[in-house]
Amino acid sequence: MSKPSFSSIISDGLWTNNPGVVQLLGLCPLLAVTTNVVNGLGLGLATTLTLLASNATVSTIRRVVRPEVRIPVFVLIIASVVTVIELAMNAWLHDLYKVLGIFIPLIVTNCAIIGRAESFASRNTVDRAVVDALAMGTGFTLVLVTLGGMRELLGQGTLLSQAHMMFGEAGRQLTLTLIDDYRGFLLAILPPGAFIGLGFIIAGMNLVNNRRARRIAVHPAPAEQPSAA
Amino acid sequence: MNYRQIIYTAIILLLFTVIGTSLVALTYDNTRERIAANERATLLRKLNQLVPAGSYDNALVDDFITVVDPAAAGKDKTVTVYRARRGDAAVALVMSAVAPDGYSGNIRLLVGVQADDILSGVRVVAHRETPGLGDAIDEQRSDWVYGFDGKSLGNPPLAKWAVRKDGGNFDQLTGATITPRAIVRAVRRTLLYYRANREALYATAANTE
Image (cartoon, rainbow over all chains, first blue to last red; front, side):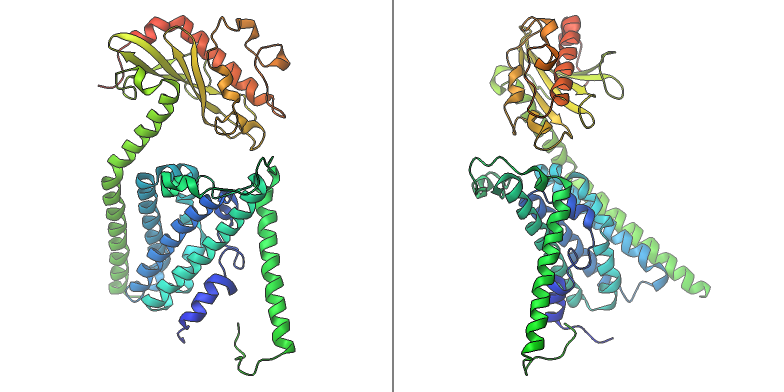
């Protein structure tokens, strides 16, 4: 199997094969948690950390573990990592932990993680697996933060409210009230807002992709490689 | 697959189970005290909203009893009562309460009653009411819950312990009557229990220590 280049791994994770909006993995936490930016960022970082630890471990042991037991071993690794992260968050980011609550343990069931372990980390070297974890994790976090930002802005007219839960008391000043005396748009905060918002993000992505494809078709750049991008 | 491979595979699996479990156990052991301290701090912060930190001198978080109120809602009808004292004098009680008849699941409350039988306040600890409507019971969303401050069973009279829609003295929320109604009922029930058991609630020895 040919080794994927680092740049293709990164563009895969961030855009082409983004776990949140292209693969549509981990939708349950994605839709449930993103009522504001800080929640999205918190879950995104926790997921990235899990991905990083699980990808690195899986890739390190890929020659030791026999294929017959690889899935149970992956599950064991992911479950342990998530539990460790959960305990650590409970100890050091207690307020945020209480908000994200059930969704931290649920990272275990985020298919994006076992998906990366099985389809990428178990077949690639450690450095590539780590880059893949960072790219996929960042891609997922970006979607969570974007969706959280859209919903928070529409729903309550602020950005980064409750930032103190993550950054300590200094974080209170990070909160931006963009619309004063905003009455709030309830739909954006409620679950339907998450689906609608995600729909808009995916539509926007398709728009950009189509436009780019058309531009390449009209003006085929000679230097452009006919890669499967 | 021959026996050798089977055993090799089994050992690998066992090895990862052991490593994974030890990792979790180690982290648990290292974070346990911090997590417990966090939970105590969070609880104390909530209790201090109802009983100001300077007004008592005992260990409020530890000085609690669990009693059974047959009228209470919840799984086992238990009420946790935290007692604030200054020396031997009673300062206030903070009682847990559950309003089971909200719009969406149980609403968990803390009800603070001063030694002079007047409410020092009510706080919502956990709820799943509709965001934007029923969630105005949360003190971070609106001032509604402060409406209980300074009230008691005589003020307003017992018959007026209801939302205005039911002929009582408490405001409902715009677009949400069920939620405030449930909370008013729960607070009223807690105060009735308090009135009947006041002395015992202060006098019973604490559960811990």
